[in-house]
Image (cartoon, rainbow, N blue to C red; front, side, top):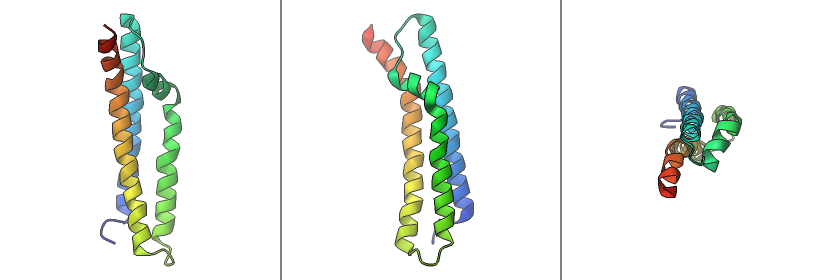
Length: 113
């Protein structure tokens, strides 16, 4: 398989965790700044700040399943590629969620003024 190695699986899951940490911290910072300014907070920012730690289960589950199925000879190459692409989709989703959690409250605050 071209990119489906244990090393790449660990790298992708570490990037996923890093994006979750960025999203949670940025959402908390945005929410706190808007609260200090007296502006309304975003629902997404509050959700990420309060429950963002639960997102850490997704990279863990993906990495465990990916490494288990990578070493299984009964799993075909097409399914292995799908599993790896699912990890990249999670990575992209966490990036979008982190950016939305960081920038979303500011757009909502600007829209209410």
